[in-house]
Image (cartoon, rainbow, N blue to C red; front, side, top):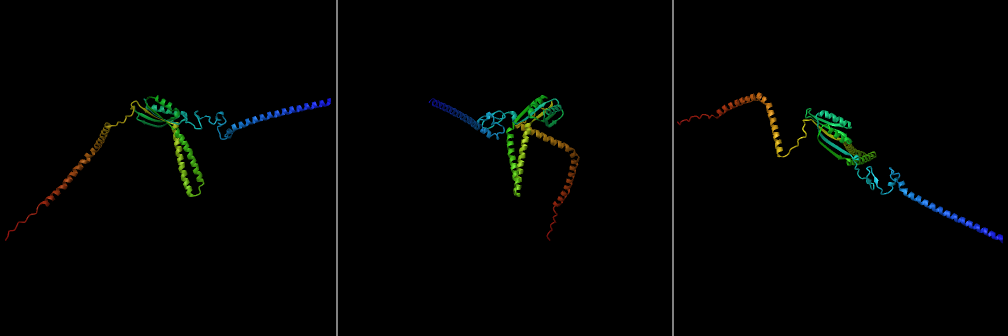
Length: 338
């Protein structure tokens, strides 16, 4: 009996141990499954969050999608000028150094020696990286005037103007600017479009199969290439004007007039102009008469006397013939009756 009780107690202990081991194993499996589910959810969420960036990674050349500030759909972006933009619409760049400005200036400076000052201005412009585009000079006395057309880099425009004004007594200065940014942007867009049209016409010309199509496409290609050349020439002209500013400098001597006379209008101005024109015409007429008078005295008087003599000779026979014709014939005497 004692042996049987002891065997039953051993079996009960083994059953309890097996039950506890199974319970522990089940609990471990449950915990492992929950952890795997959580990690899978996190991986799935991370994949879905990074999905658009990975999908657009090939098209995004600048790598903006990989940055935290670019991950949001409505996150503001910044252009070159640092101004925020919404929805991809770029605001205009208002920085002066990023715009195409055409500077034009004219000034008049009175100096003691026009030629020497003109040489100084030429040297000044050359040091600034520019050149003299035109040089007109009048007289070499105290009233001498020299007009120089200068082309200088736009970045040194103000400095060159200030240096020239210090060479003498500045009498006048006029500076104007023109913003050509929009014109250049428009030209760039039109040039790109025109180049595409030229390439399209060339492709069509290469596939032409008839003489009629060949001639028509050649004419069309010529017109498109001419339009493209015209647009490129305009762009080069604007690029030249924006890169090199124009300054017209007038150097006047001590005796030169300060400013040109203004044109007068009205009745008195018209009367004065008419009187000046009459005096000028009369002066010309008297000059011509004075030039012809010696010739008239030398050849005119003898010719006039000769013509007068010939005229009198022609009149004398005419008068005699007229007297002979006008005399009445003699009337015969009447005979008496027998």
